Image (cartoon, rainbow, N blue to C red; front, side, top):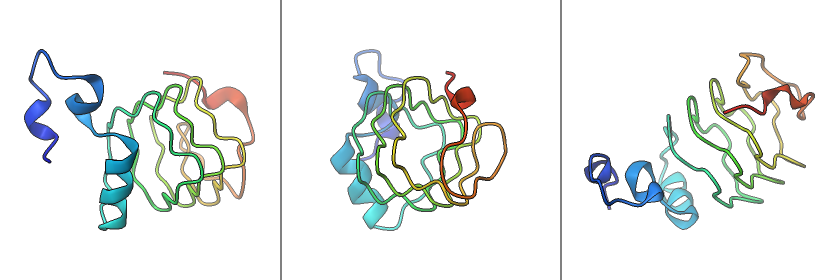
Length: 114
């Protein structure tokens, strides 16, 4: 399913408008897709997911559950993380919203903005 066709639809749901549900995210990731720039993943549950190397720059991740996920080497530049659950997530090598690259885990709550 191509999600781009929903972008300009007035009656599209939030998930259809810019992305997909968690199962679709995981399916695309498994197929080799890593570019999820500016994705709207608000409220999505991807706990314990392997998303190593994913590009989520400019993504909306408010209230997303990414707990215990592998986000190593992920690009989270300009991502909105207000209310996102990153507890236990592997952030080694991840580029955070402030442009810093982290060595292992979330060091500050200053990333939680939208």
